[in-house]
Length: 340
Ligand SMILES: [Zn+2]
Ligand SMILES: [Zn+2]
Image (cartoon, rainbow, N blue to C red):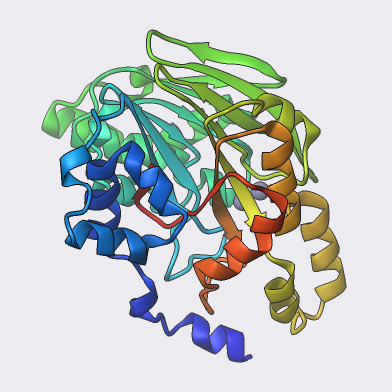
């Protein structure tokens, strides 16, 4: 089990520092998008050289932060569980909430109390494990306004059961710390089909049904922000619905699976054949993700939800080389806390 042993031995040299990611792209703005595809090392070099200081563009109204870029439910040392934040004018729209999302928000310097709305793409634990926890922890920090949450059924029941599970802590903090009733602050909305999910003065959110068997329904979301459009694929195999949703989008964050490394990993599993068939039926290969981006005509493709996503760490170049023949636009290999 060579791969598994390596999984416990992170090679820190492969990990970007938080300063590289957050300090870097925030300052570079649009200019960063042109360099991000070259990898974080290039970005760091540019920054240390001060190469872009004279041409810093106006800050964007929308920020996209990759909070967690791993795929799958098992905790990994080098990538956090799936979650993305889109921040518009200081309001945080959270898409998925895998385990550890609250902490990733803190590491990204996002105020938990800035949470405006939450969106779950589907009910798999790598995407929803901290659905309730993010709300509970935000409330225990400084959240005092209503948060609308959107996701497939049984979102309403999950919300109620989460509140029941944590009744003791919630009652204690209400009495002890003067917090408002948490139940009054969470407004869950179940989504069962495609179309507009919500609209406010900053964003319009539209859902498409994607194919991620056996989980139904599973959604991709498009955020039309004041300055650009961002699409989050969720988990899906090659999906014509997603291509339609992402038509002409500025940024597409898409899940990705690299078969050569996956085959090595699952070869040791007793149910390798079944596992491989499941993954192929419900996820998108490097070749397919390139085709999706090309067919949708997006400007920037951001790879995330990497499978395999643990150790051994697959180098950025490997992902780029596998996708590049199929998409001529900009490709960004996502890392935790990367801001775009
Ligand atoms: Zn997933
Ligand atoms: Zn999934």
